[in-house]
Length: 528
Image (cartoon, rainbow, N blue to C red; front, side):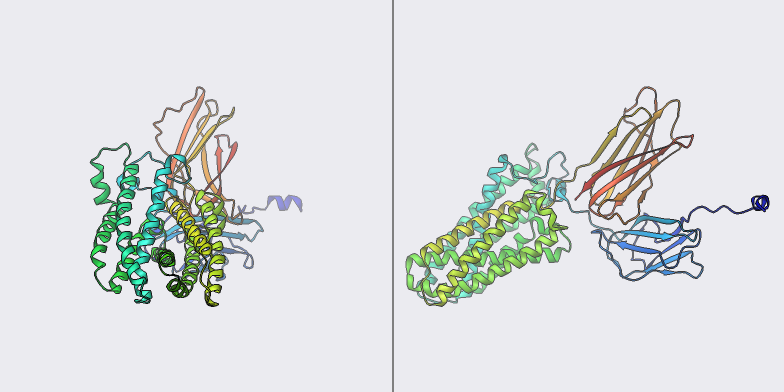
């Protein structure tokens, strides 16, 4: 019987392998596919197979259950309409012979925008400059820039706030209209001077080391340059608006704040409409609070009784403004940061935490002020001074973190290891979510010869349940002088969106020689 069993011909079956996929791996589609369909070279278990499709923030895009075909060779997951982006398909199945099979691949829908990281906030990119670092941390060398920004934002909120309040007060009181008119012109003059200094300092910093001809390109061909020109024109127009009705003043203030909200961090995040809206609400609420507080302080010195009457209106507006500041600030934070853990990665997060503490103190001071006003008592000078001091600190914090990148700077992966049986190097450039260049170089002893195969896989260390992503590297002519005596070099390269989302990753490089001896090297890295 044993001899008979041995002698009977039998088919030898390997483990199940992915034979075909729709959408195809590493392929770009103009429109969203209706479903993911995976076909294997042998039957799979009907009760165990699973497919998961993740977006660029590693979030599942569908909660539907996959369906197994009648012949048990295919697994299908229906998809909702997918927007533009990079998507990861991760599958995990068990073949009919009981072996688990898993893997991942990426596909693209439309033309995804470039991934947002610290480099996104570098104006040198628009000018085609290279070799300049992006500001992600506070340094003493940038003290002048930060000081100018603090004064600029203070002047901006002061001037815009003063232009908003005539519509809110509608000529109440006898002393208030005169104080408003007096300080509006002063605020505009201050804003104009500070804006010119602000632009001068930033332009010099951006073009440091470049010829003066680059200033034309900066102001006429870049987004930030055109916004600077628009701001100067609006401030100049503000002196004419002073002669018109309060409605025109309010419209001018909102337009100035809208221009400012289109610059900076809000302009590079998606969805842009939401980030700009949050930024506009944030600036508007800050302007109402800052302008109203300065009017209250001026009235406090001129007419205590009218200051008390104005305090009733201001306390209500201030509490509403603070509520909007908090809500819009939370909205911006969740848009800017993939998770709250990022608050501990950069100075941006640290300053935001400090600013939040100041806002909480303002809520306490504002609450006490509101209670006194409701009781009919006049606000005390100490409360007003404390509120003004906290306002100055909050504006200073806001001016600082509007210049610092919310996200850490990504550094290219440059790994090299020397060994007796193999030298190996790995480069991932620029190492960010989305498109990257992958270069693998292998040196084997001359007695062994060139490698038979070299494979590169990527594993997500944050989502360990996902299968590996196969990176299709191919040989190329390496012109770098990186030879070693007694070793044969093989170089491989590819480009593509094989890092679909930010996080911690592990690159696994498997090198097999002509004798089918395999060496495995693992390299861990992360990006933001």
